[in-house]
Image (cartoon, one colour):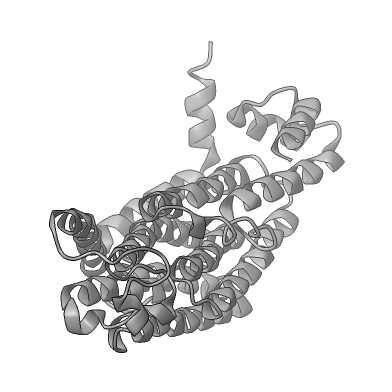
Length: 333
């Protein structure tokens, strides 16, 4: 899809330099092909990002990976798709924003809703978190669909927050599996009584993912929802708020199953996924990155303004195409 889109762009404009495309596409001789290329890029980057209805690969694959690898993928790979969409649809494809960005906004609403509903039905820790990746991607591409400076700033802030929080939750899932030998929430339990410190480390990213103040997720969701209200996208804002409540429900389910209820007998005997481990140096090294990521989440939550100012500057540069075009084309030979 990506290569076909690139081929159409090259056939229409005779270039694939993004700054040059931004200049030449408005005067292209076959303007009817530009929306075709735009939709192809939406599909290609939507698959990469895990957006609705192209997310099918993500919950079917992420739960098969070792937790450190899943944490790396969850934090970075889907954001590559979001980043690509943001770059292309703020620089190249802005000729018909009612079509392109309207399509992205509709995809965002369904991505949020379908992802969180899928998560609510899961009892595998990593599959639940995988579906939440999908729902959170919806917030990020909604910011692009709204296509205002405030929305883009909120989307950039959301990406940075989500990288930290989602990676942390996958690492915590790996620690619980190491202790009790399973990722099945029904086979886990008793962590609050035996290892209260892990329960505290879980609460920070879990509540941040749901958007509770004063954690980083609250400010990220607040920025996107406020931008939606300012753009009079009331349905999208309402869905975003409802998805936050359902995310809280999912995190409460994890808390109840993993941390609050007594440890099942099967987990004490080794569970279904491996032999449980006791505390030791290996566990300590696992906890250090979790604690550091939780500290970053708290730091962003209590001091969001520096990161938000950075996001606003980045959004301003995305909206002001002339600066980028001048920087690239004037440096060309």
